[in-house]
Length: 500
Ligand code: GLU
Image (tube, rainbow, N blue to C red):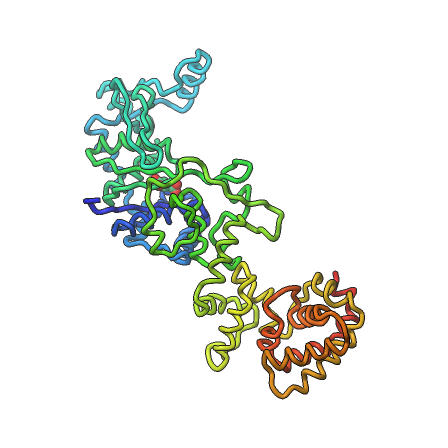
């Protein structure tokens, strides 16, 4: 590409950062980075009633958390109100727009009549043909007006080649003279957005297919303002399994970026998942580093058809699309453990599990333990919940683990405290010494190893499964293990309570 690539992400700050919005930002960002171009963040806050400070903050925080950076901005559309008005007047002065005095009631009546006669319901262009004197007279009387764009009344079609959808055309005769400034003097999105994109030198507009209906009209505005029309690429929409657009109203928090942050997602894992909602590399790769993704990304490989967000409400195991969870689990297992340690810190603090020594003399133990337990985890939250027994003596018991591995064998009530005595007398505490002692104990009893080993696991970790038991014992430490095993009779006494 010879000219510099300049893209923009222009969210309307009327709510939290939606995963669909985040995906738009990500595609723009990837494209800019790939072509060593620039990404501009522009907050489209002209809808003053619906725009909020909180929403602006949420959008900026969300992008920052995801690691999506921008090169210019944030600019605020409201700062350029004068520019929008000036361009509207320029269109009036050059005969490319006109004042329309038709009232809402008149327009409605015309529309109804056209519908009844099965005729075209487009605006009938009454005011397009008013003489300048007539316009002046009405203005002098203070009759309110909107400003309409004067669509060239030519034969043929206007069109463009969408990078995703291919050739798109529309006959001039089918395009209504659309409103660009309301009767209260406020310019509309269609105009402001183009004026801003021209001023910012935007070369590529990558946005959702929900904006497809605006594009031809916006191209008309570009032409009327004598500006170069940028390249357009319209991304598919994201639908749920019932083919509904995903939204907070229908799906709740699961569509907001904040939800993933609160549920222990690794930011890059979410980026990786969102990229695949509407784009594919052309091979079967699903995991990409930042550099690989920037390299692989292209507008041509954005899907034409809608993407499906595979979310089944009500299933707590799959609190979002299972693919998102799997991608997150992949990063959780494979990222450098120091990065994971950094990411869980805040959560550990919140959960009362943090120990300053994890960054001092217990650093190695902390890293080794995180590394050992992460294999089965899906989110960063799992360290402080499923992995709690490694970091605190107050940890939950999975009722399934107790039922299956402890209460099923009444004898464990006395066996495990007996085993605790043996372990307590060990001189060394490592994988070999604990294994030896436990295997000898099992042999003496003449029972299956699993009964004791699974029983120990259920008691000392609260979980039915986990890493190799001898590694677990070493990580949890002698004192804690002995103490927990000695308290087994108490667990039996609390059986009814613990199983509910
Ligand atoms: N503010 C618009 C939106 O959030 C921007 C549309 C565009 O990209 O042109 O949908």
